[in-house]
Length: 360
Image 1 (cartoon, rainbow, N blue to C red):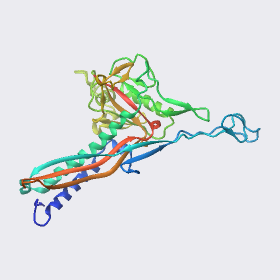
Image 2: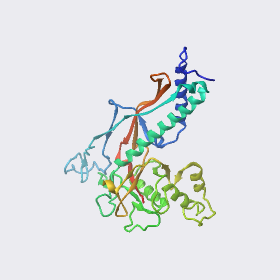
Image 3: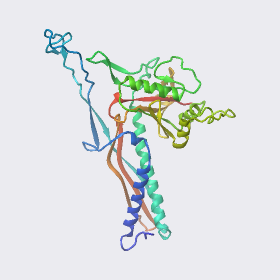
Image 4: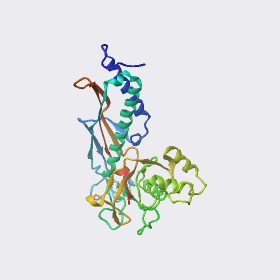
């Protein structure tokens, strides 16, 4: 099957359609961070408006007692009276923005197998589109607050007391993953120097926050803590009994089933009740530009990962992938452009938090 570019019967349209079909196939086959977000379309222009309510809790109430009293109270009941809880509605917004991939190629390629050219270009456009969406998701992690930024120690979750008398999460605390082997000088439920240790504490914090389901944990696959390398290498070494190691001549032989899964798939579907994913797209914050985060009470260069429930982050698609093509002036080249219009952002800070991953 071969298309003739610029033919008299509109063959170029068939070529463009073939590229688009291959791009869609590559896009749907990709497995990225977007799979763990809620995908929506804008509800106002290019923006998705997200209503957020404060938590509403049940309090004990006994209607057989005397009329209740107290600020905000009404009805009958033991003190305190039934309290009318202000849901404190706030509204967040997540905006979609354009992204483009433009290229050009010689028309002489039409004299070869155009079908293969369409397949190659389609796979490139579709795969890179999936990567761009993941980059937008990873960039949204920066909006998670860094609770250790201005404090000597990580202050953890921000809470308030609900009407039932128990703590209610306002926002989750930032976690800190220090370099391998470097002792945590101020141990807490929010800091560790091993990947397995930080995942355990994430699960603990997630449970304390009373969040449902399985937390998604995103760490780096391309970072360097200055000791063992990336978080992915560290996890491999920790899970493999030393069979995969970052230290020369110290390998072992006992690869665990989890280690085998990580080697085969690049992620873990269930580690201490968490889904662990590694990404190349985590952004770096550096001391040099004042964007550092504290790790182990030290202002550090970090990659910013995250842990979250699947309803925490929304991906907004204004327009999906589109492919356009035409002839450039002079007739020697064809231009080809992939178009997209999307964005990602945090919808509810109660359902996720950042992870500051120390870098060398």
